[in-house]
Image (spheres, rainbow, N blue to C red):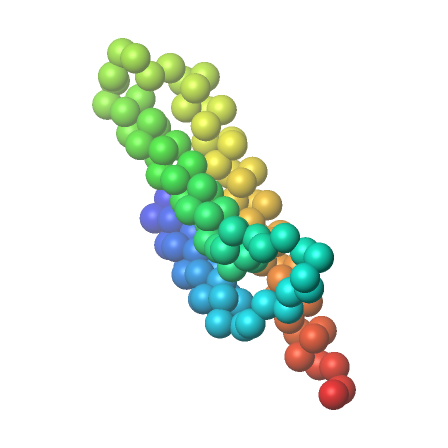
Length: 111
């Protein structure tokens, strides 16, 4: 990954964490019939961001290990892990885009 790409990833993760923090400050609406979620949407969003971040960090570490010539790291594994991290990141971007669109729609509603 290039430095610019890593920088944009970090910016996106910071934005997603800010949205998760804002979402956690909103009191959830719960009915007596609904089971209590473990942490709610904000906690799941945070866990998801951590999984994407760890996938990217793991793929980058494996790529560095391959570049350094470590014998137990194969190019196939590096490429597969890089693609998994890329797909996870793209999915995260789509979730963020839809979350922002939904927020804007709700914010634009007349009360």
